Amino acid sequence: MTLNPLLNIAPLLEDGRETELVSILSELHPADIAEALSPLDMEDTIKVMSFLDISKAADVLVELNESARDTVAQGLPREQLTRLVAEMESDDAADIVGDLDGQTAQEVLSAIDSEDSEDVRRLLMYDEETAGGLMQIELASALDTDTVGQVIDKIRELSKDLEDITTVFIVDRNNGLRGTVTLQSLLLSLPDTPIAELVKNPGLVVRVDEDQEIVAQKFQKYDVRTAPVVDSQNRLLGRITVDDIIDVMHEETDQDFYRLAGSSEEEIYTSGVFKTAALRLPWLMFNLGGGFVTSLILSHFEASLMKTVALVTFVPMVMSLSGAVGSQSATITVRGIAMGRITGGQILKSLFKEQKVTAFMAMAFGLTIAFVSGSIHGAVRLGVAVGLSISVAILVSALLGAVTPLFFKAVNIDPALASGPVVTSANDVVSLLIYTSIGTALV
Image 1 (cartoon, rainbow, N blue to C red):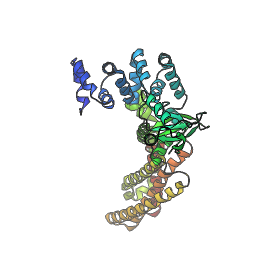
Image 2 (image 1 turned 30 degrees about the vertical axis):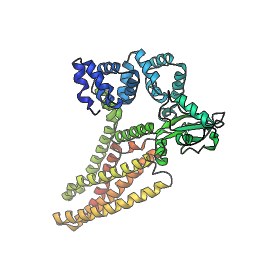
Image 3 (image 1 turned 45 degrees about the horizontal axis):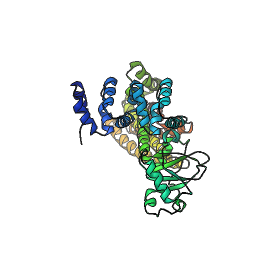
Image 4 (image 1 turned 60 degrees about the vertical axis):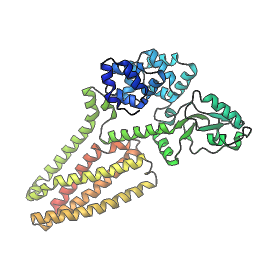
C-alpha cells in the first residue's frame, strides 16, 4: 500500500481516531512509520509506538534517526523498552542500549533473557565504529564434520529466530572459521554428503577491530552480501550483512558532508541555541582569522595597489576562482580517500593528475583574463600581470586543496575536516598574497 504517512498520522492522532490509525500503521513499512514520526514530539511518538505490535515497534525504533531514537528510547517506559530490545537482533539491541544512560542500560540488560543480555554486553565491548560494533552475533554455523542433512536440520531450527539466512559458516571444534557454504549448495546436495566437500573460501573475512569505513569499502570491492567477523585467532565471532553496510555508507557520507561545511550532524537535532552556535563557532573563527590576515596583506600592499587602482578591481575574481578550484581539489581528494582510491603509491599519481588538470584550467583562465583585462584597461602589462598571477594562484590553491586532506589523514584526523572553512580560508590568504606580490611587481 502506497501512502504518504506524513499526511495521515498527525491528523488522525489529533482527532483521536486511533482505530483508523492502527489500520494505517499495520500496512506501512517500519521505515515509513519512522519517517511519519519525525515531525511529532516525543510524547506523541511514544503514544504511536504503543499502538504497534512489539515486532514492528522494535523495527520502527531501529529505523528512527540516531538522535530521535536515543530520545524516544530514553522516554519509553522501562517495561516497553525492555520488550523492544528483547525483540531486536543483537547488533540493533547493542546500538540502542549503548546510547542509554548507565542505570537504564543495566536495568534493561538485567530484564531481558540472560543469553541475549550476554550477546549485547559482548558487542558493547567493541568500538561502535568498528566491525565488532557493527556485527551481529546471530548467524548460521555448522561443524566441518557435519553432513548436509545435519546442517539443514540446524537451519530449520535457527530459522525460527534468525532472518536472512543465505550463508552457513563452517567452523572446527575450536570455532575456527573454515569457510562458507551457500543454501543453494545445500539444496543441490544429497543429505549424507559431508559438508567439508562443499566448503568454499569466504569472499571476504573481516577482523573484529577493523574500522567500519574500511569494511564498507571491502564489501563494495568484493560485492558480497554477508561476511564473517573473526578475532586474531581466526575464531568466528559474528557476521556483518549488506544492510548494515548501506547504513554505514550513508552515515559516513552524511558525516563527511557536515564536516566539509565545518558543521556537525548533531546540530540538526539540537534545539539549544548556545550548543548549536558552539558547534559552528570554531570553524567560523578560523574564517575570521583568515579575514584578518587578508586585511593585513591588503594593508601591506596598499600603497603599491593605489598606484594602479585597476589591480584592486580584480581581487574578488582572484579569491573567488582560486577558492573554487581549491575546494574542488579538496572535495575530490576527500572523496578519493573515503572510497579507498587514494592510498599509498596512489598519492603522488593522484596529485600529479590533479595538477595537470589544474594547469590546463589555469592556462585557459590566465589567457582569457589577460586578454580581457588588458583590453578593458588598455594596458598590456596589466593584462599580463593579472593573468599570470591568477594562473599561479589557481595552481597553488589546487595543490593546497589536494595536499591538506592528505596531511590530515597522515596525522589521523578526519580528512573531511580539511575542506570547507579550512581550505577556503587558507586559499584566500595564499591567493591574495600571490596576486598582490606578482601584480605589484609587474605593473
